[in-house]
Length: 312
Image (cartoon, rainbow, N blue to C red):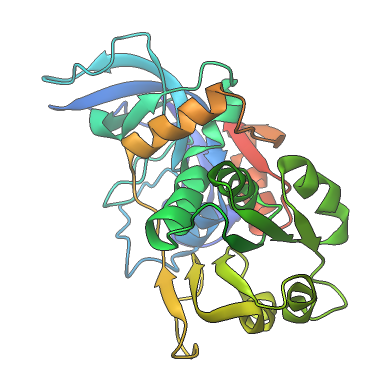
């Protein structure tokens, strides 16, 4: 099969595109023909070797943890899906090797969910990592409820845009933080308030809107924006971050760090929301496998609006 892969840790100059062996389908697994693969900042981070202590990597390693595609073959006891079914998945395994930047991927069938029927493969491939991250951060850890308010940092990126929509569907009030150029985009997705992180203290700006503070901060940006935002968190409020691991935070904050895990049941919930018209995915650009390195350079810039995808 054709794949983009790397043999050593480093930058995108190490990405090769060529033929690798088709992975073997074992018991309980399915072979999926990849129609589209979502690109995420973590793909570049893993490739650089920064998560090696947490995620072992075996070379040659294929990047990519998001996939939408078609079931091509099934192993023994894998009968949840039929050959030809359209599926999507968050494809992170305990060891990084067989990713989604390829023509095929083998996954445990327990990872898969039915692809939203009303979305293209490119749009569906933009959901799993960011959708599950937002879901697990705000609902599993953040315990966000209807009537509460949530401050989303990095709200115009892939995770933030899904976060806005999921929080609104839950019945929460949403404040999105991003640069001025993305404010109309966030409001269209359902944000109630938007705050620019440039030229002002984000925490002060939020306190002007909500003098009593916010119930939940969902941090998908970290850095100065997070530090400024802490003053806008209610006493005893909750901070959930996908980047910060809690060092040096005030003791009165209910803090959780989230590293998203595969969850097919939650993907089915996201599918239902998408099919009900309550979840949309903005795909800003698509890349071929031959240009996978360019896709990884773009995502590493942290200035991507919505999602970008690789299409084999």
